[in-house]
Image (cartoon, rainbow, N blue to C red; front, side, top):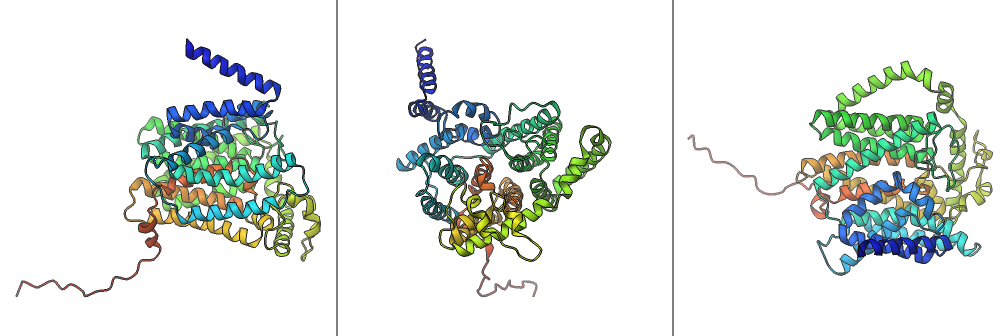
Length: 484
């Protein structure tokens, strides 16, 4: 009875502060509840919420939290996880996880980007700078990279990872279902309309995101995780259930009508087809069935003209070429700290850096607000050094995954997960060449979370030697011949 009364008082206070616009005490109450919940249940359930929540039901909770500046469920949960992790480190509880080189690179990158971010403050109002530029830095880069470091320091096991992946697959099936509800039944309750939506929101599936590119990218990654779990499942009914979930995700990916996720999915699936023979029957059968069903059903339920127009459209390609040239021009003229790390920095000055090169007119870049290339986004906003550090972060992540897979001491599960995270890496990197992933709200959080899980199998000194094995020197041993 006392417990129910306490919860009633807490809920009443939270509602009161929220209705009055007193967002600081409202955040304090919500953060305190999550903090106590984490202490009671442990960090692992909070980590599951951080990964699965933003892609599913957080969209409804965030619509209420939208009245509180800077407050979203994923940010509150992240800050709770970060606080508890730092407390555990300070109290020296659990195993001490050593820093790997990629984490040091991340710290350098975040610090360098922070300096570039500070340079954009002088000509802006404080609230505008916090709500746009600082939010971009925090949500797009600080939060994902810090999540990588947090996840590496949680006590993961094979069973916990598989349970997490089951939640991810369920989230993927949910996202696939939302595409059907949105485009065929006109239900848009899942779309976060309290945020700025991307282009073509009426004809492309969005799921719980603001951009079809992010929706397709997330589904591509969820499909890879679903296939990974399929290879580890022997029960026939579970295989059928997984195939049904994968089919829903594939439908959502197709209905995103966005070429960058399609390309990423194609390359990553080709990668696992090449290196994991267990999935070849599934991929061949699925492709054949999808093609047959598409030929029969697609003309009746889909607007094929819009699909063909989208696939063959040349304008976005010309836009990208022109804006890439402009981004390189920005980096060349601002090599130290770039143009300043800000949400609108690129859009505000693009016309000053757009140039004509051969048949590519600078006018194609005049109305583009971002470089549509993650590496060029960082290069133009932080300069040459920022771009170099950023590239080496990706390179070190690839090396970690490769080292785990090549290490003779890695168990079968570890080799499998490193292989599929390699496919995830290919998916993200190919998308990064065509879109600015950092401006998305969830994609990098998903990427660094998954790579953080894979990196727990990385033994710093032992596995690094797999990239170069020095020849063994010494005297050859000669076995005596006892036959004489």
